[in-house]
Length: 303
Image (cartoon, rainbow, N blue to C red; front, side):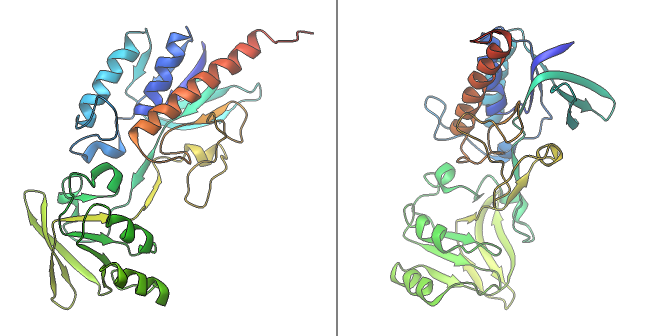
């Protein structure tokens, strides 16, 4: 069987694309590995009518809508994907079973690389976050620290002043700030600590302090870290997608990549990393995929 489209990724982007295509009476198949970037989050935000919902509950509602359209969601990991000589796409599950479609949509997302600080994992999603637009409101007016070792944290440190008057930038031993940046941070009362970070401490997921290599302890309530992520899987590179300097896929305004018939939506592509944006990208991709299929079936100027 050749499907109209295969969607790899069962998050907001992939499932919203599935709804659009299902409503277009398309034969599609969705693969869901069960690994999601926001699985550690204590609540989804910036999504009208769904603020604070647990990500797993949001996805359960979305799956119900998808399956109600007669679409199958297979809880399997796609290990490889190739473009065939006849311009179709074949995906492989467990390097053995294969499925083929006319069009392929990758909604595989990215995964965050947590700072290499002992003990930080137990606070992730509760008081350690990567996105102030997602969690800044919940942490507002608290003692905030920004951990930024491998990326210049100047811009994000200034941005965090939107949510709190008490912001400290931790560079974990790095000395990347220019004189002008230091002056600007001082002007906005943003403290900078360049000492190596040793560990973090807290209770029941709530951060209470950061310890440094020299024994200094900084009291704090929440920690944000700068964008430090990578593609969730190697499919985009296997298919030779064009990536930007941040390691996400370049697409046009309807999520089409540089490979004909291949679309990428959600955090794996170049837009803002918000659930509502990922879902919107999925919708755009779904409409674009259907239009592409329509042109294949009924050319506007048949020969």
